[in-house]
Image (cartoon, rainbow, N blue to C red):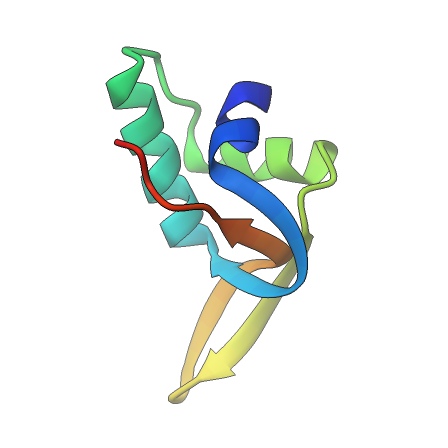
Length: 78
């Protein structure tokens, strides 16, 4: 999990990333490295335990988006 974070995320207090986008990137990472992925729930708990952003939700176009503030996805390598 630490290697995924190192390669794909950076802390940025102005950024918000949706949980779905973070998890999709994680699945691509696991597929690329032929790893068994965590469930989405375990993945989000690992982000919390590793202090990657703050769990939050926001309204956008009358839709609730669940995600994390303070995390920014880096450009995709996969």
